[in-house]
Image (cartoon, rainbow, N blue to C red):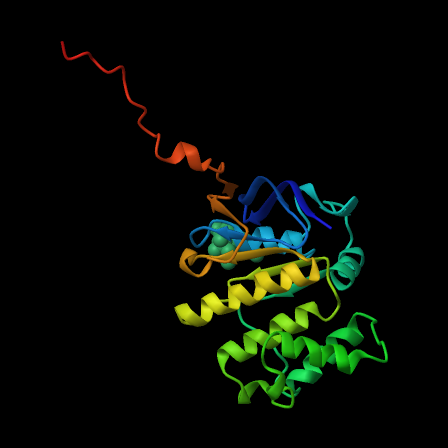
Length: 244
Ligand code: ADP
Ligand code: MG
């Protein structure tokens, strides 16, 4: 199912003042594809992701998954939590794993929180750890894993509930270029396999070779996409004078 962010505005109260972190953003992410959201620090990327995740209600606008309007300014916290558990997987900038659980247990706990307890849960968790290429590390605690491996556990955990939407915030910020590129490739591949509409925030365009689309955010707004054929034509030739 496609993810639709429709005219999303998010205003934070700021003392007597207010700060518009997201200003009338409309964006569609088709099922099974990955859209990268690029932009400088403070542009509003994480704020937009927080709205899409149901962590913060939009001030205006709505989030649609397929035909269902799932999040609006009047969505309650329990309603938003339900939407998140049922339909949305999230990978945060830092993996946010529980220190006392093994990689495999992190996935199983999440499935339980989501109310998914199929007999095949262990199998599915193992298959996901395999898909993110750390099947051999399932018995290890976070402290025994590298940063990249922890991020892979977090990605597998986000997918255990078979979400229709996958939201990823700066997954490569703690990784070097090659590992960062690999993690983005892993995410785009999993999006394709699982059909999840995936929105991936990054400030490092060089790791994004595998994404399907790129959108830039600046000062709370999405920049108008520039059609490729228009890029070289910023200065159209003026009337050429005849050299007679
Ligand atoms: P990005 O992820 O692109 O770096 P953010 O969404 O984190 O940007 O921030 C956008 C703007 O909103 C910034 O000016 C930031 O200071 C402000 N902001 C972010 N979170 C909050 C919050 N919880 N309360 C108030 N202002 C916030
Ligand atoms: Mg951010």
